[in-house]
Amino acid sequence: MIRPIALTEPVRAALSKRVDAHKFDHGHALVLGGGPGRGGAGRLAARAALRIGAGLVTLAVPPVAVAENAARLDAVMLAPVPDGYSLRGMLADPRISAVALGPGLGLPRAREMVPAALWAKRPVVLDADALSAFEEDTELLFGQLRPDCVLTPHMGEFARLFPDLAAAIRAGGDAIAGRADAVAAAAARSGAVVLLKGAQTIVATPDGDLAVNDATGAQASPWLATAGAGDVLAGMIAGLLARGFAPVDAACAGVWLHAEAGRSLGPGLIAEDLPEALPGVFRALGI
Image (cartoon, rainbow, N blue to C red; front, side):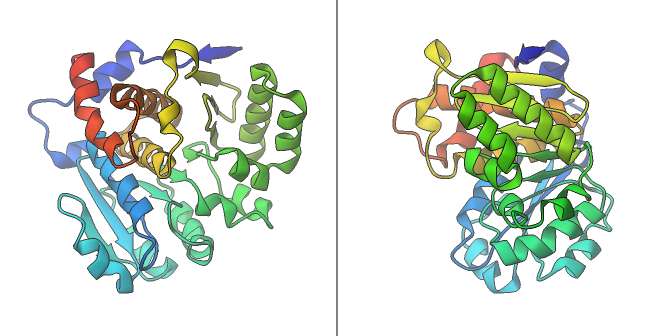
């Protein structure tokens, strides 16, 4: 059975912050970024994680990219992380509560950093290059995944990891049931939460929970079809994971809030606008 994604009362309550809390009560999200000239996607994800309510966010980049990112960041912290060994050392800090990687990472860096991030056994969001890097050896990736990992592919990335399931989706046309069955099979095969992005975004867990956010008709937000919007979504989910949300709740709430931010902005939005729209979305929700 496919349930519609909505902000339940417990999720809405969890989005609020206690008046007596400090920043570490709301988690520390670590976002992995790429090399020089590739930093925009990581910065979008990091800012989204901070706007969604993570208490702290650090963007970890190669040392040669520190100066470029330092010129663009204020509230987001910055750390030089050259390799997987260094990432493992950074993740020895138990206060880092979730990791996101993939946007702008580059395939060689992704192949090194994904196993290091998964080794630390923190909730992880894998997007973009963190998925495509394992197209030729999907079992290497799937063998390291856990139910607290969230994969956020668009259809092209989904096809790289699950070519047979993508072919089944294409054969079935626009039928939502067929797409949902394929995403459910992907979640069972990978052992992780799988979120297939689209106008009808589907979230599936390894144990068979299925949910859809139908952003069509009156709920449509077509202006989200813009470069960087998916990076923002990955960061939003990472921020919610850092705050302690269960993986499926983080994925579903992230999708809902992402679409709501897009609708609130309307025509002409670009990815940079989406994190900045979240305070208004929260106010409208009474959060």
